[in-house]
Length: 183
Image (cartoon, rainbow, N blue to C red):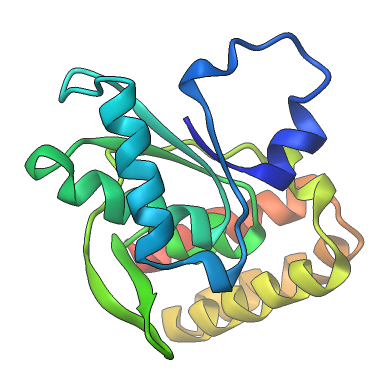
């Protein structure tokens, strides 16, 4: 398991979990680099990860980038499962498979395609988001709905007010429509 340290602390730190198969990553933009990739690869080697192992990535876009990148270059590619914990991850980045890391001062300069084998969405992770992060995801969802055409713009309008109020049914509707458009 490759997990955002913040998500681990919120959801899992109080539970008894065998930690030897979990790597906690400080999911900040400044750590989305080769040094962190090296840390993950060393973890894979230490745990004798093979193509038979299931790799789970739990977190937002930074974890998705780091996990997807690491899995794609380790032993010529491992399949991995993504569990997005941000609205942006659930509505947009989980589909498409673009992963990248920063190199020098350039964002996502070292990049490739590494789509997860599965994406598991649990909207309960949205309970930890700040309003700013929720609005960031909603902004991206709006862009997708506009791209999808008038039908999806109307669907967005039907759901946005309650979604801003964090109504899970409406948030889920926006996620579903966004993923349909991306697909």
